[in-house]
Image 1 (spheres, helix red, strand yellow):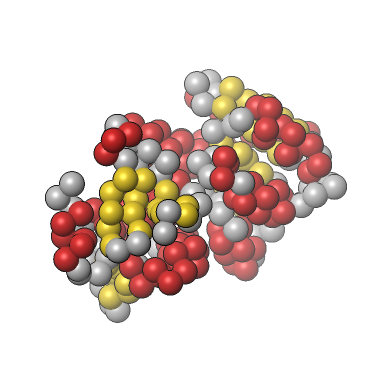
Image 2 (image 1 turned 135 degrees about the vertical axis):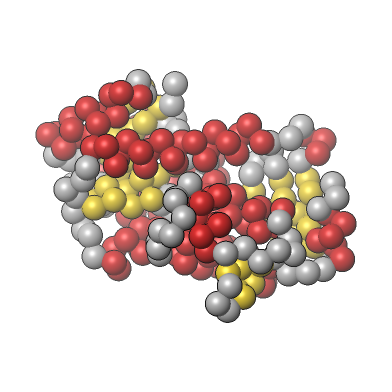
Length: 241
C-alpha cells in the first residue's frame, strides 16, 4: 500500500484530496502547516507528497527544495497542487524537483490518475533494479549508472537525480544511439498519451543537464527530432552489459 502525505493548509481541500484518492486505498496522512511538513516526511516516510505552494510557516516550494537536497528523499514522488497556475510557477515547481504540477481547482479524477502515474513510475523503477553485483554500469569515462540507487555517479559522487530524472537519462542511454522523439519520451517516462504537448520534458531536460555539470553533453538535442545519448565506444560497450 502506497503512503501519501498531503501538505495543505485548507482542511476542506485536504479532505477533497483524500476523497479523490479513496478508490485506490492508499495510506494517507495530512498536515496543515508548512513547518510540520519536514517532521511528517521523516516519520511517515511517504512514497508520494501532494504539496501546496502557499502554506503558513514555510512555503511549499521551500519544502520541495529541502526535500530534494536530502539524498534519502530522492525517490519520493512529488505532485504540487497549487492555486498558482501561471506558467512561471509551474516551471519553477518542476525545476525544483516536482514530478508533476496541477493547478487548483482540480478534477478529482485527473488527480487520481496523475498520482497513479507517479507511483507507477516509482514502482517500475524499483522492480527493474538488478542485483547489487550488476548495479554499477559504466557509460563513459568517469561516470556510471547505479541501478540499485537509481542515480548517476560522476567520479563516484551521486548526482541526486529524482526518479523521473533518472528514468529520463537511463532511457536515452539504454536506447543509444537512437534519436528519441518528444512523444516517445513523454509516453515512456511520464506515461502520457501520444500527441500531448508538455513543458514538463523541457524543464526536466534542463534540470538533468544542470545536475550533470561537465557531463551535460550526454543529453544531446537533435533539432527538430528529439534527444539522443551521444555515440561513443564506451556507450556501445556499456549497452552490452
